[in-house]
View 1 (cartoon, rainbow, N blue to C red):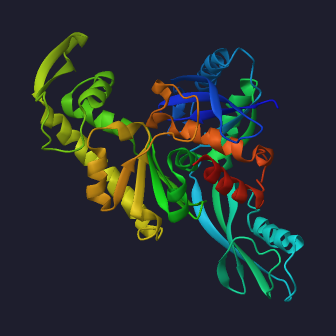
View 2 (cartoon, helix red, strand yellow):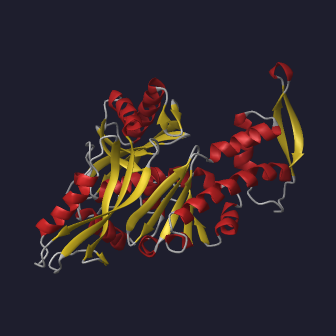
View 3 (cartoon, rainbow, N blue to C red):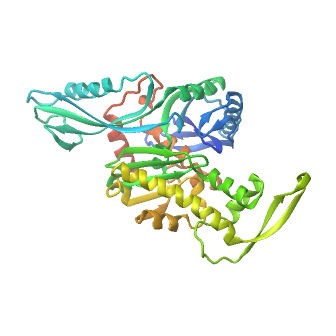
Length: 411
């Protein structure tokens, strides 16, 4: 039995990553054989603002991944999306079945009715998945086939976005001689790679602290039930440091990475740090400051991001269900003290997440900053024959069972 290859592109605010993996015929667990990444260029908050720069960045990342994987060129890629003002909504549709035994035709009929409601040419449907079915108003039915009732309904979770940003991204990908075969909402991908099976079933929320945006994905009953994002992330923390300490952005990023902490009052072995400052005529000077000064800049910004996320979770009605357990991932989650600060703001169970469900990741690419790329591989390996880039993406019941079984088999 031959392994099949899959390739994905993680288009982030700070970096663009290409992952190439193999998936065995007897297993849906991907094994990474090639990775390439480079600094994002031509992008602003995940939206293409310079097509030539974005194309060059994608091409460089893909070339590096292909060389690592053995040199064979890839043709098809799946990509994440965080631009186009993604919107997550719930859709309920019902059809009459006249009391007879519910068949596959009835299930397809109610799903078609749901797709009819999605026929909005101004929006691209990223995900349109049946979360559960209802029979005569009684919810929680996973498979209604063979049951009896008067009215069959479906509860669908729909994620949509403006189509123009996606078309621009597709154009950049096509210019690299690649075919775009699927699109995944960024926080959904991050959650797939960092959550364990019990968290997917019982309910939890994945918060991905990226460079330009922070994204939110809620899961329950092995389903993606809510997604959102806010335009604040680790880059805003870096900019605050640069402005507050009058230091270049590159130096601010280094300070954040080496000495950054989200909690004031934490004792450290090094109480003072050196800060590079730019003086007259671009002459660099170094000054020494208390480390707590750096913390006093980082803590308010991260706390503000968490408070905005908390308000969105409350507004979605998830505070007492999926919102009881949080998994924080993304490059920004590597700040010291972030887990403790999250517990303080959200007042619930919190843990840090990293890619768990993908084999072959090197130590340098197995961290939280690569969670989205790993999640894209998992999504592609679950049901690749259904992942086609069309004007309206159709879904079937098969992917629900596929996802649930995959986590049971691998954990």
